[in-house]
Length: 469
RNA sequence: GGCGACAUCGCCAAGUGGUAAGGCAAGGGUCUGCAAAAUCCUCAUCCCCGGUUCAAAUCCGGGUGUCGCCUCCA
Image 1 (cartoon, chains in turn yellow, green):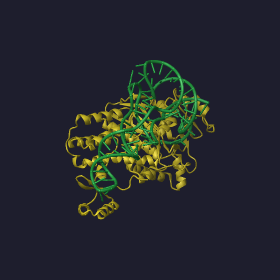
Image 2 (cartoon, chains in turn green, brown):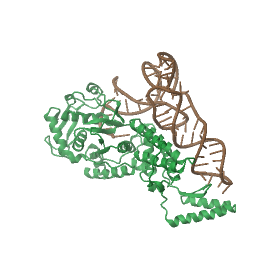
Image 3 (tube, chains in turn red, brown):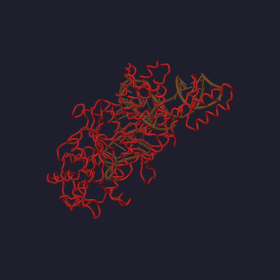
Image 4 (tube, chains in turn purple, blue):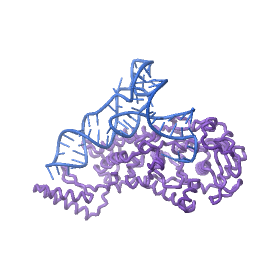
């Protein structure tokens, strides 16, 4: 399995520290608002990384932090007129809700910054004592010149940063790129006691402390979106190296951004979409398909049309499973033949190549196509359905087959539908097309779709308009 | 100013030296009273120019265009 490592800018063979297990840490949300569709891409993609690693046989420990103290929470607290702690509580609950709705599996642990204040202070104290950090008027900064290769992850040089610095000079800093470890509290702000006075930690320290506490000094994968490379992850590495001499993560993975119809998503452009609002209009699997249809490191462009296309595509998978009555066969024993094993091979080859989900999805379509192909023997079609579900699950699809494939009608309702079909068949025999069409149209209004097949009339429940804009 | 990414069919998208996956849409056929559904078939030489090579979408150089980071940001 190869993974693109931002640290080396190459695809590297993935070798975990402990064979058979993967420890990964994904930067989570700052809980000052509902998360948006761009966040969703990142969270969902790394959910797929986790699922696939598990599918590949690894035991995965998955940590995702929650940043629950930060300037943005303070601002939101003022805006909503409720305490910072309540802002955090509200949006943490929303995060879990929306992530679940997207089909994202819960992390093994979700450490919160405010639970780690004491340990962060400890780390900062050590860095100060060892000469990597300095205090100025209650603030504490990390000195980027104190370590040898600051900028290694992002490919930046300390000198260039100096030239490019656009922000007004913070006269307290010895170097413009020095970053805040501890920030003195202004009146009314949440604060904790520290050797430098009352204040709160800077953002870049929490992930170092929490990952070290839960995963050890070095772990396998550290992930986030591309914008975190600099300065966030660069600054994490600086602190890790200052305190242990080690980069705390071996593989650094970064997902690309999501744009809205070609433009960067921003509140000022009025093209800002919350994940929960999109979920009201589109099926979660359509959204998943959309994200996975493009390689994770490339930018992806969001539009309603494209989600709609994705929804159409996902329907294909389900129609294959419906055709073969997957629910009826899913518990039956089966042995895959060479043709199915070949598909599995193609699937893992694609995914092993830095999670090429687009190519992997093409394999799902092959499986779906064969599962539907009536010239295949039924047993063969069933096996293709099995491999389809197996591969799909590794990508996070088919999480709730019962809900998707069952009609959710009671027996009486089904008998009534059957009764109408009988009446309609008689009407057709008498060439009473008006009555036949009326029955068909009226049932359609109730969400029951009739299909005249060579074997008689079949019916299915049209899933609610989960797809159309 | 510094750093980086990308440009493949109407739309989305894979493919990094050996002669263009897949999906959506579209067109045609089958089926049908009609329709829907289903199913089968069809559908690109890869932004431009030059170079390297037996061979390039894939490598090199030069254009053009789009986007991102350097500041909080998933």
